[in-house]
Length: 156
Image 1 (tube, rainbow, N blue to C red):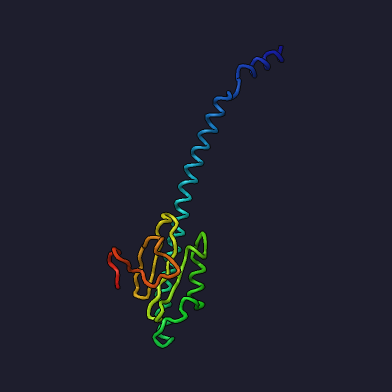
Image 2 (image 1 turned 30 degrees about the vertical axis):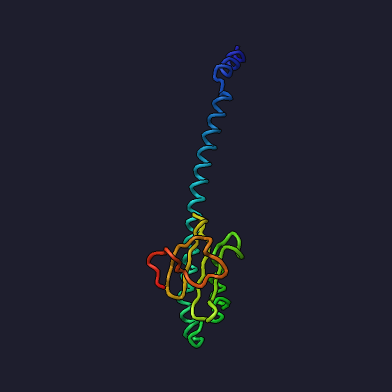
């Protein structure tokens, strides 16, 4: 008799049905995807802050270079300090996503790198102290200043 009672109790308790298990799995998947999406946005915002922070370092470094090199920016973008700062800038493609250029007369320079949250934008700094968000299409190897037509609050 004892065995029948135990078997009957097991049959009545049942456990979870397949539908209940599928619902639980679906809820877990949805919550996981929301968390992953949110954390990716925070990671990209952190990368953008790193881009800006490392590029801003170049403004002061450029002025020190200018003072120590007979009022010339010649060679600045290839200097150790500029190369180290640029190497710390995160980029999906190092050759296409970040640039530093001194103009032909060595009187100006600019550096820029593509942002992550909005990859159609780039962050730009130059020897005038400008720190601007520009269109990524303007961030090229030929950039020598951050001031373009239509950019507000820019020191020409």
